[in-house]
Image (cartoon, rainbow, N blue to C red):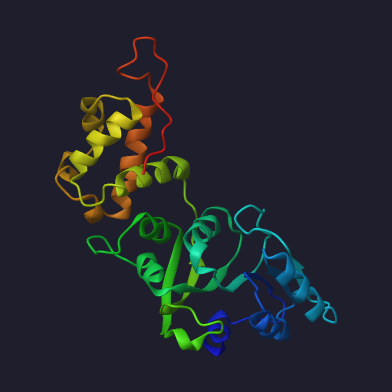
Length: 258
């Protein structure tokens, strides 16, 4: 707990979002230092108990909702022991839709390893690429299971995430490309793009014409984040045109592979 709070550096004027407040242990500590705490809890009974627990505190708002379905509030910081079973989709939502300055989050260690993985490593993934483009991520510390209650079955890692500018990328197109290619992460880019071409109903010859030939024999998991950005922008031009296999010009398929 102390490690999380120290890393978060909560200031008196901060509005803090907590995801998965549970029994309210972290919530109580945050409420001692923050101007306002928004505690999200999906479970109805847990949310009711939290409201009772913090009924005397004016700076704690308990929201009974699903973090993956709700609109995210604008906050200064996010501090949370994330629900491990949905920590990856939560992270994508925070990266793409969140409006915050920094976050201190506890993950299952293997997910944290993917967040900071570099090209060529066994943990390098769609999550790694997206995180590197949208945030600066720093591991703070690993913890054994008995450091938490209730005790998880796995090791945990606390990370600090600081948002970066989203830039001018077409993020929908990039994410679509990442999903398709990382479903074939150990194949060469050439082989992966052959599959991509079939999914999108475009000619591989058209795809290979717009892709840097120097990348074709690299494995997908060896490519740099900037390579995926360029690939996405190039492939988007192909997908905008009429399908090469469709004489009626009905356009490329919308299958989101991977």
